[in-house]
Image (tube, rainbow, N blue to C red; front, side):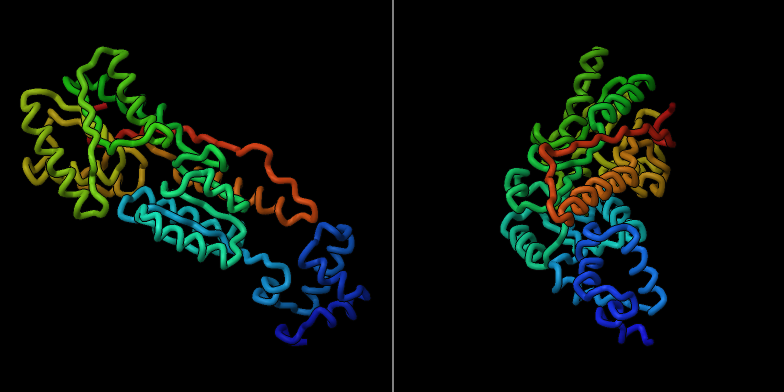
Amino acid sequence: MGKKNVTFADIAKYTNFSKTTISRYFNQPDSLTLENQEKIAKALEELGYQENKLAKVLANGKSEFIGIIIPNLYLHYYSEMLNQILSSYSDYHYKFLVFVSSDKKELEQQYLDELMAYKIEGLIILSHTFSSKELASYHIPIVAIEREAEHICSVNTDNYMGAVQATNLLIRNQCDILIHVNVPVPKQIPSYNRIRGFEDTCKEYNIPYHLMLQDLGYNYETTYNAIRKVFEQIDSSYPDKKKGVFLANDTYANIFLNLIFQKYGKLPEDYQIVGFDNSPIANEAIIPITTIGQQIDKIAKSALELLVLQMNEMKKRKPTPLKEPIHRQITPVLIRRETTDD
């Protein structure tokens, strides 16, 4: 029998089950005994059945789609996170609908409406545009990554520990002045703890430091120009000091390193540079950059596990939603490369 011609009626006749039972196998498998599920699965294999995905969506409203909203792709962290999430297809067989928000609320609302129209089964969100309370009102499984998540599940890096690791390394390398380059991050955002960890560690060891918190652009060109001004300010302000520069991500660190090479043709001994993320650009830079590894693969895997946990619960006849959001934290790893002494 040809694969395309196998119908529920054919399967019912072959197994001596009713068409209703066959339908339950596809739409509510937990309503059947394990023995009956195995009988039907064996029959499908013997008949060469090929599932009609569109018919299944129309029948039970389960699209097998996961939505993703990501702020941008010019920061290497986001592009690598997306790569890791998309590679999970072989494990879970969910398809993804991806939107880049650019932090524009009206545009992101359109994206959310579009995703809901496609009957997504779950959402992974990295953008900061909508509050977690607003997102929770959609009543679908959601996992946030590195953003405010009081009312939804989340997976984050231990940003505070990562900042402490970076700062301690620069202190051990006997830098005269420590500098942290970042944007003004709201306190409810997990990455704010990079700022807090840096400042707390500098104060603890009574090390001179400079927080450079400012708008650093919204695409590669504007970010490059902003980091260039930051470099010029640091280079002119501390000419005779060993400068330990901890940048908020590897994209910033790579631009900063390129600017140093453009001026000096090398990395002078009075510069120490640490990035954050361990996105591929850190290892592919003109010289490999010391960084705080977020273990992006583990974050993506944990986010998918947490989302699938919720989605599987929603497929039950009597689902029991989580009473409280689950929040997971992944430990960062200091990765020493050529932009620091140690």
